[in-house]
Structure formats: C-alpha cells, structure tokens
Length: 340
Image 1 (spheres, rainbow, N blue to C red):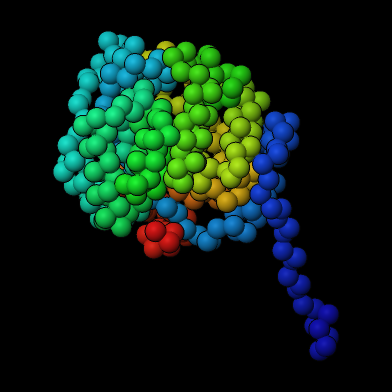
Image 2 (image 1 turned 60 degrees about the horizontal axis):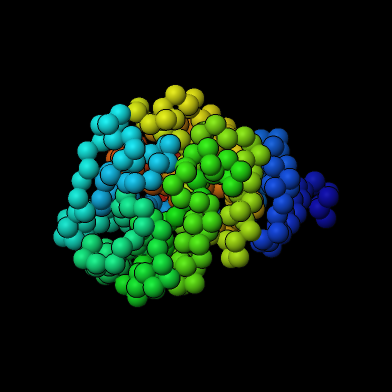
C-alpha cells in the first residue's frame, strides 16, 4: 500500500536466468522438452530476454550454389545421387561468382543480413571450384553482409582458408541423435560431422549447427541431439531447427508432417539450454501456419531463413515473412546490430 492509502501493484521480481552450461545430460534436456507448454514457453522467453535484444529477428537468405549429384545417402535429401531417378532433381554445376554475388545483392536489398551458400558436396576438394567459393565469400563480406557456407566435410587447412576469406559462419548440421543417425545416413559417420565442426571452431569461424525433426526419431533422440550441441564449448553461435520436408522420391517421403507444437518445444528447449545461440526457424516453415511461426518466435527463435526456396525445398514468400514479423510486433535485425 502506498503512503496515500491506495494499493499499488508491485512489479514481479525478474526471473533468475542461469549462466550457459555445457554439462547438460540427456535426461535433463528431455525433462525440459516435456515441460508443460505454457511453462516451457514462459521459461524460454525469460532466457531469451536475458541474452538477446528483445523483439529482433535476423533474416538469413540461403542459395544453392551447386545442386544435386551428392554422393551421400541422407534419406531426407532430394539432392542425393542415390535418389535422383526417383526425385527427378537434375544436377546443376557450380554457379559462377558473379551470379552468386548478384543474388546476394538482391537478398541484401530484401532485408537479409546473412547470406548462406550451399553446395551439394560430400566434402571440399582443393582446386578451382573451392577458389570460386572463396571469391564468393569475400564478395559477400564486401557487401557488409554475414557470409555462411555449407560445403560438407572439410580439413583444417580448408577451414583456415575460408576464415582468411572472411567467412562468418560454417553450417554443418548433426541432423539427428548419435543413436538414430545410422537410420538416416550410412555414407558419413557422426564423428565425421564432429570433426568438421571442430575444424571450423579452431579456425575462428562461427559454428552453425542444428538438426532435423520428423524423420521417425523419438523425443529422447531429439533431446540427445540437443545434448550433443549443448555439450560444445562454446555452444554453436547459430542453431537451425528444421522440420522434415518429406520430398517425393526420397526414402522419407511418407513421414507424417511435424506438428507445430513439436517445433515450438524444440525451439524453446534449444533457447533454454543454449541461451546465447541464435536459434533459427529453418526448413519446414511452409507447412506451418503464420500463428504457429509466431509462436516459434515467442518460444525463442530469433532468426528465420528468408526467401522463396531453401536449397531445393519451398519457403514462404518474402513479403509474407515481413508482414508476419510486423504483425508479431517484432522488427528485423539491422546488419550493424551484430557488430559485423
């Protein structure tokens, strides 16, 4: 009660948010993942506000710079040469540097602050094509944008060369848990993925690493994948959470669509256990309603892939995304807000 006799409403005490930790157990993460939804989202919001500028969303644009004919057998991927006959995806050669930089300029003009380039390679090979990618990275950085690539496995020397070119981040997803991994991929080991991420980290490049849900894995598999990510010290700077896009012709074509609440739970859990990471709502947004995507943003996602296509799968129209962000009362992160 105030001095004049009127009741005053006391402000609630700020939530106590723990410092980031790298010793989460799978059971602990599973418990977070299975928290009642309202409580889970509330907790994720507390963590988000403690570590990130409130109300901002980073727009990242993704371009396939070399499509198809990948020798890997990832069961979710239409770019695998193993399923080319069934998917009908035609192989395309590496795009030339000028074409890629033109697309980067267009993405920047549409509001993107990060430009990501993906090549359907099993691993990086030294030579003219890798030299072209280095030129692409340098050109994107000269525009004042963040540059990210995903090129498959790479050596320490190759990672260092990418760093010298100015690369901001390297994407190399875990895809799923160590336990479920062999059900999805046989041509590359889990340790191969960890080794590539280690090379990226040693080079000083930011790590972009996440996974996919909806491939038939259990909730415990999802928690296990997040546990591997949260055990990295430091945590990945970017954590993309993807929902499977079941492409006809791939072995996973008949998987049921991921429920929106499953994406919300994954994003909220990732936000809680990796508080400083930028959690990116990635593939699979096309199947989510606008309301579901806004709920994902409320649950701690602060980045989206932006543009009509993610490599070879559909993505919402750019105008729809801008409208959604505005309707949610959020605003687009400016390039200089990241200190880039």
